[in-house]
Image (cartoon, rainbow, N blue to C red; front, side, top):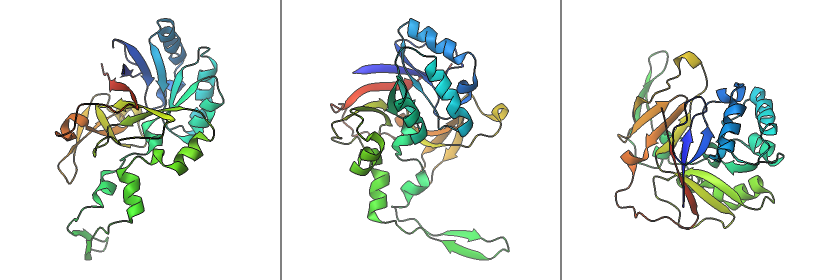
Length: 259
């Protein structure tokens, strides 16, 4: 079992051990002239395990291509959209499927659909009052959000398409880890934060560098934000009855470090 530190590229790197550098919610470092220099420095120290990339805008696709060209030593690149996956596949580097691309529980409102919720009063713009009720979606959709859709035959075949083996970065699911996954996958498990969603970019000046409390879900679970990322804390939602062991497909544990 390997243990990794996940650090942000524009912060001082003081974490011990192997490092994943990058951010899945913010692509500023792809615009930074110092990003390549910092990556190469960590490679020279034999500390860089991989690079974590965000959902790519069209403008930043070329930035990622140029960055990867400048890194001569093959490294793992955590990708969070299909376009980035294709870019990395064509390079000398090794793609790792990120949490956004894996499509786990990304919306607590969707998770709540399966519960018997009371109707909620809503008002139209002209003041007419009505009741909004959630209708449980089909079983297929519930399985999609309760499981890890990445591991379905259809998704696996579409993404990998002949690619031999794949590492995946996942949260520890709220409902517990699966007992088994397809043999071609191994998992780096994030046990610190459970991703809720990524917010659209607006103004970098108002984007919080430090953690801030956003509020609670209808089930009383706190949601936090740091930069564009909204998340639960695993320590606040974990199942106390979970066993402490890890299945064989867990190849590593990753925790974020913030300075």
